[in-house]
Amino acid sequence: MGTAGCCEGSLHALRDEGTAHMKEPGSGFTGWRVASWLGVLLVSISMSSCSDVDVRRPSRVASETLIAHIDDFSSLVYDSFLASPDGRHVAYVLVVGDRRVVFVDGRAGDPWYGILEGSLLFSPDSKRVAYAVTDSSTQRAVIDGVEAQKYPYTGYTPIVFSPDGERVAYIGSDGRRSFAVVDGKEEAPHDNVEGLVFSPDSQRLAYVAVDEMRKLAVVDGREGARYDGIGDCVFSPDSKHLAYVAADGEQDCVVVDGERGERFPGIRSIAYSPNGRRQALVATDGEKWFVVVDGMREKQYDDVEDVTFSPDGSRLAYVATAGKRMFVVADGREQRAYGYVRNPVFSPDGERLAYVVVADHGGRVVVGEDTGKLYDNVVGDVVFGPDNRTVAYVAKVGLKRCVVIDGTEGKQYDDIATIGSEWLQLNPPTRPARRVFFDSSTGLHYLAVDGGDVYLVEETVN
Image (cartoon, rainbow, N blue to C red; front, side, top):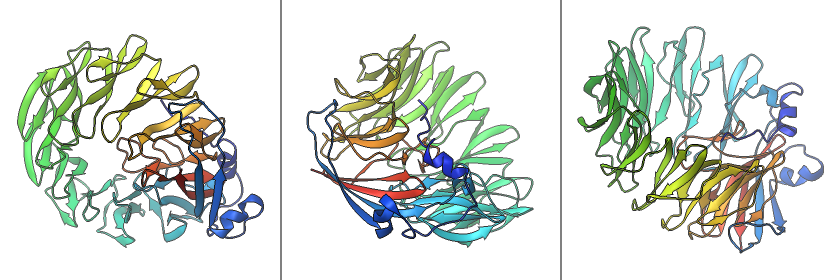
């Protein structure tokens, strides 16, 4: 389900007004924004009664810290607004005169002739920032403000950090062929290179190369067999194994460490359990789709998506479609059907399962057998707290959005940071879509936009 724009009032208006310029956080606010001028606002939120999945109605105390302000959203380069993986920082690109400038938490970097669309990213530990810049004939990566080697312009320079944030790789070109550049060193050239991915332990790198119209996986610099097509490379959680979907003729198979598995007319995706002991794939017999888990086929459906394991790997859930009905299948058992269902997620102990349903012209959250309040929409996924009981999510109320915690609605903002939002999106875009971050069983934080202000909101739940 796409996320409907919640910023039609203030954010869209801001984009259409005036000349682009940046206001330093904490300067020149009036009215209710005097508190944000001071930097931190303590807000006691008295929650109204509403129906949700839990009878508890916790009290909430929130603080708002202004981390950035944009006077004119028309100066914002489209789709460049990025929230860090830890949910505490923002980066974005503004047009300043005839140049492009990256801002991180309101602080400006160097001006550039051009910044490649979609290249801006944080490292997974949220401590580093990278992007690709261009001039009339060349392009290069800029990592932590330092320019890397120049290459001929191709308009395509994806950059990836290793999970520990220490290593970086991107794609370079000599004008004819492409190659991976890993920690500043060029690897062997190919007709094309795509899909760079580091292993979870940050020690290995894999990608897909194209030579003479055939695709091959390159792992740690070693080339694999060639196929008609290859999907994304997926490392096991322990980093010891690499899997990908390979197409040869009219059949697909999963290749693990170079060994081909069972062939199907089509394979959509591969998923490992968090402990790496189990593997699930979504395959088709040409008519129906089904999950193959640990080599065993489950029931066939018209469609299957959103496959997810519990944190300990003992449970499996996914969304299935049968005719006009959609429902979650958990451990082989079909749950209640709805018009639309998405993104099942397990609690940390694996005992509880939550997901978002769309029905009756709105969205609601289902936790176990309990159905929550109907909102205009539920944005992103559901998040469980470390206590396995507390449930949080972002709800759309009219043109605003708020964080709902165990049925209590927080302050409404123009937007809350979520994957899929036009204004704020997390990187890397991996499930679950994190937009509410629990720091403890009683503490959480998130990023919120109100007018041109971007706040780090930290809450204590009593």
